[in-house]
Length: 454
Image (cartoon, rainbow, N blue to C red; front, side):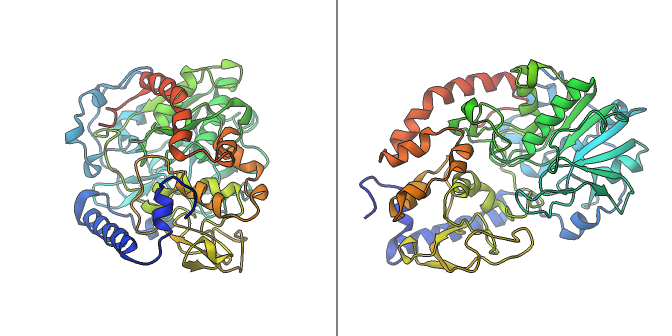
């Protein structure tokens, strides 16, 4: 028995008997139910991602432009029971809505492999190709972590280059500079951000958006954000970041799971004065249609190399803490962020061996057989789950080496590691978050564009 308090982690460590069978059967039932139609978004073929093929652009119903400091009329009129993943219209799909605002302007696109725009024929076109086809003056592309094509490892420096398909310059915002320089913005009138986020504070695409907003504010440029769903938009949980731990994996005083779309967060960054010097970016947001924070949404493409499917995305906020520990979370396997383990049998009955592969060229614990937990069939709770990290800390033999400095950076505080070391239960730790969480939730309501989770 690990510790004295019950936890989902402790249940999962039972490798034999009826408990594990029930967990497995329940997981398979949930998976079958989801596949049969609860989540209606279809995966876009990988070939569409790789080639950014051109296809025809159909005109969309034009709507009134939402004031960037208020909820849009479209969002106000969206009833939660009417919203489904099948009829969500992304900001990027509302071409007639934003195209007139780009006319005659020199545009810098902040995009990557997720910047796909569904078409009425069921295919998808990359936003770069769509805008070029429409005659927009695209000057260059700015690429975030993982690069324009989304293939670089986590943390891997990405060099600037030229896109062979379009001939456009591709400026890396994850190399020597993470913020567009004045020289890079000289021939730009407007920056346009359209990247799929996953709703966790330490996922760096929102940090790239922050720096783009800051550069735009400093250089007197406009910035537009085309909105996309947050697959964790129905959850708000975790410790709120202490500014002392501000970094590229946590730039804002928001919880680990923040419950905002990128456009809502952009409004919050602007409205709360979080840009350097409390500057205000000249921000325009393009809201989605038929979206609510309750709408289930499966991402049509993997947002980064080590988040290959919906299960990994749902587990990501809880498992990412292990990046600041000696534990492997499956990088270098076909199922990253779906397994955890360490090279000792005490950590579980499931075994895997990290090996180099695309997206994980030098995975932690490379070549070492790890014992641990297979979470591929587990149903993640609608909250941050501390059971895994608490349980593995209790199992780890050399506790003084378990928490690396990066753990506090990810947590946005040094209190979480301290609380776990003190032996506090998950319930006690969660209770300590509540005052700051309640304050954040109150502040968050001022920037919502869509009905909140029910």
